[in-house]
Every structure is written in structure tokens, then in C-alpha cells.
Amino acid sequence: LVCNSGPPRQWVSSYSSSRRPNHQTDAEHCAMAKVHTKRHDSRTPFWALTFLLLRVGPVMGFFSRSGATRFASASPARSSATRLQAADEPPPLRALRSFLYFNGPEATARRLVAGLAGGRATAPAGGLVFDASAPSGLGLEWGTLDDVVMGGRSASSFQLTTDDDGLAVGRFEGVVTTRGGGGFTGVRTRTLSPPLDLRAAAAAAEGGGDLTVVLRVRGDGNRFKFVMRDDEDWNGVAWTQSFDTAAGEWTTARLPLAGFVPTRFARTDRLARPFRADRCTALQFALSKFEYDAGLNPRFEEGRFRLDVQSIGVVRA
Image (cartoon, rainbow, N blue to C red):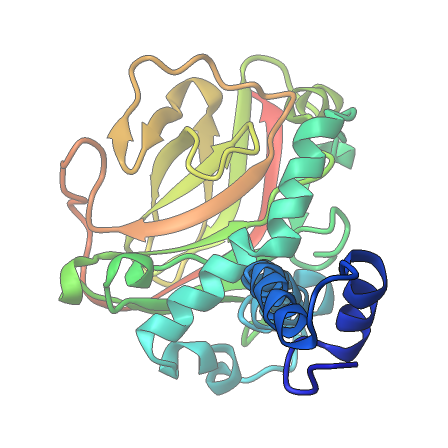
């Protein structure tokens, strides 16, 4: 080798044996090798970025898994302090966790596969979509989606627990505030794959008539929203219907399919097609200052809230 401080040893050797003309001096050869090295090094950012993504990907997956609730592994023995631990984190970190949980590499790949597969939907047995006493039946994975994603300060959680009477519930609770321009909290499932065939599930359940979603809930007097989606588009149409609760009392909210409003960011999408009940891809609960089209929620109050969910089902009523 003729240039010890130049390009990598193996590369110069290759260049020397294959490209050095007989009339070229050692100094000329060294200069030419450096030029070729610069051209080679110009591709370094691409490979560095590829390496970074491969190394950071697992870390992003860790944040996404640790920042949201997985019902299959949720523990009924967790205390309120543990359930609301994420709420004590800085809003930017919580926003990052939410983003990675729903839109990180793992979640994005799952949505892509689900969209391409277009597999046959699953019909929940007996019309029961969610049962707090057996939450892992359909593999629902819930994660919080609060107003921190737009600079707000609200915080919520959703965990499997037991109430004072020993009843298994899915507890959606936290603090909602309009500080920072927000005013909403929510909990949403990851994209369901395969999707749920609510029409077939309702047909298998007792009753006749129009498809109706039935929620067995205990609230605090707030008006909440229940949301369903029928595609893999993260910001697609959200089919929404509000329901009222009585403070500390169990109620059965019956939500007819015809009463669901197609919305995008709480605004009515008047051009939306009908909801595909045979392909439900996500479920969501929300507490918001707004109803639809800038209308205000008449029962909205800032502060702590709680909604216990015993079951989500579909019937024909």
C-alpha cells in the first residue's frame, strides 16, 4: 500500500490492483484513491440511517408496549397509583408513548398486514364483544389517546380491575382539563385483526330488529362517547354515539346502529358511506368537551372522572 492515511486498506488494495495505470506515480495514485473514497463515503448517511432504524426500532417497540394497556396481561391487583402512573409523566412523553403504541413500527406493520389480508371477520360468540371477567377472549389491546397529542394536559388510563363488590370491570379513569387547548381523553383499541363481524354476532344473539350496541357501564354523571371504526385508516371515519351515565349507578346504554354519527375530529362527515357492521376494526371510549360540529357537551365537567365497563355487546332490538 502506498497511502497509509488514505482510504480503508482493503479498498485501496482493490483499487490498486484493478485501476492503477502503469504510468501513474504513487502520489497520483494516493490522490485518486482519496477521491474515490469521498465518493464512497457520500453513501454513509444512508447506511447510518438504516443502522439507526434497525437499532432504534426495538427501543420504540419497548416504549409502545410499556406505555399502554394490554388487557391480556393486565393485573386485577394493580392499585390506582399504578394505573395512573403514566399520568404523572410529562405530556410530551405521554404523547410519544401514545404515538408509538398506535403508530409505531409494530402497530403500523399490523395495520398494513390487516389491510392487505382482508381476511374473514370474526363473529364474537353470543354477541359479546368485551367481557371484563374474560378480557383476553378477542385479544383486545387498549391504549390511551388523550389531548396531549395536541398540546393538552388531560390524562387517563384503562385497566382491568375489580370494584369494591369484587366485580371485574374495565376502568377508564383520569383527569380531564381544557388547559393547553385540549379538553378530551380517550381509550382506543389497536386495529383488530381479524376485524369483528358485528352483524353476524348480533344475529347469533337473542332478539330481532335493528343492530344495537349494548354497553353495561357505571359512570359518574358525565356524558361519554362510544366509537367504532370499519377500516385500517388511523384518521378515518369514527362512527360515534354519545351516552349519559348516572353517578355511581350501573346502567345499560343501548346504542342503535342508525344513531351512530360519522365523524372526523368531532365534525360530521356528511359524505361518509354507511358503517360496515361486518368489519369493525377498532373500539373507543371518550370523554370530550365537544359533542359534534363545535357543539358543547352539556354534561362536561373538568376534573377527575371514572367509567367502569362491565361488557360491550351487540343484539338485534
